[in-house]
Image (cartoon, rainbow, N blue to C red; front, side):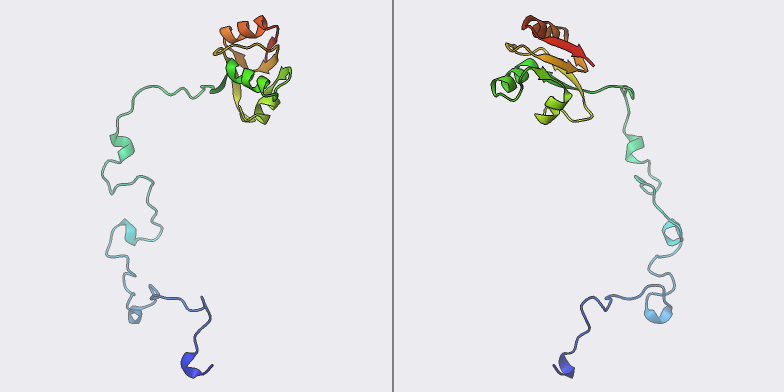
Length: 149
């Protein structure tokens, strides 16, 4: 090591000019903010979606329809899916939320509805939030029980 190859430690020297530190720095005066206008002032923060005074996109686009804020979203599980799990030995005789979560058919905060597609041969006691009429009839026809939470 000699004087001609000495370098400062990595990250100890900041690159670029220091802004707003007087005229001598070359970046004094307006401090790279230009002249006048909202962006030159302190405390400026642009609103999300602001387009320089032009009507923003979310206000230009027409809105229609109706969004029900109280809507309940159910995860649908068909009977043929349950029958497949029975055939694979993953379900024995009772089906509740814990079993469905364990088999990744529903999440822990989901509302579950059993739907009537396919046929159910196994006798199952199913406890979920909702059933369709056809699903309930098919479960009871197979000798099972449909319990609503």
